[in-house]
Amino acid sequence: MKVKTILLGAAVASGLFAASVSAQTIGFSQVGSEGDWRPAFSADMQSTAEEMGIELKFANAQGRQEDQLRAVRAFIAQQVDAIIIAPVVVTGWDQVLQEAKDAGIPVFLADRDVEVDDPSLFVTRISADFNLEGRLAAAWLAAESRGGCNIVELQGTVGSAPAIERNSGFMAVIDQFPAMEIVATQSGEFTTEGGKRVMEAFIKSTDNLDGICAVFAHNDNMQLGAIQAMKEAGLNPGQDVLMISVDYVPAIITAIEAGEANASVELRSAIGQFIYPVVLEYLANPTELEKWIVIPSDLHTAH
Ligand code: AHR
Image (tube, rainbow, N blue to C red; front, side):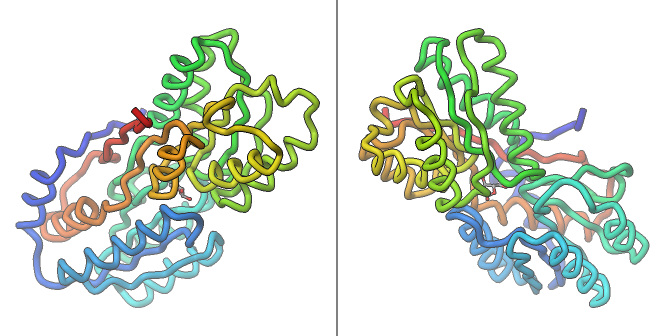
């Protein structure tokens, strides 16, 4: 069980911020540019680094782990002061993190997570609680459907922490309701195109669309793709079918206001203000930190 600390908001950040030291060079290996949330997170990390006088070396892996591993090794060779990684998938990190540790460069995880044998290979993870997001989505759906619902699930990138944990949290709740069941599930890779493709295939393959009560999408972009596919098939997403997803990006707010989606669990993208102070404080005063610093997620609905 990972011990986690719920971030206390600006007070913590401003306190840590005040302790920031002279300009540091930080390497940031980012997953890619999928969907709307990821680019917003990247923009925030770059603008906040500039505001804080951090020299940020930003590497976008376009969803390829081999590019992330290459970027981390380049940061090590450049002898950066610290490395931040948003890992595309949870496995395959032990070797490169050991190389960073051997080089004396602290590694911090942002947004996503890794599964490693030795937790000392990274200082801490600063992120939302994806499992809680899945539970919040399922609890909302259980209430809205009065505990009876056949659900289509659009999963995120296979092997990624959000896909694993959002599904796990969602299942932990719907398993409490015998009449709630996921009747179809497939990855749409966190993209609008992927969500549309999966939903189109599902619509073609099923002879009982009326039996579908809800769509749970691991992110808003896949949900927006599903909405397109459902409308093109003459369905009424948000009206006849409950639509719940995660991220709360502007485009899903528009869909909720238009009655085509019903709810979204917010994943905050402006989190550089929390990540960098933790890194700078550690560089100034290396002490053991909790392995997980959690940024809260909130459920948003139309009313
Ligand atoms: O890791 C967070 C997830 O990654 C977001 O929910 C999704 O939009 C992005 O692709």
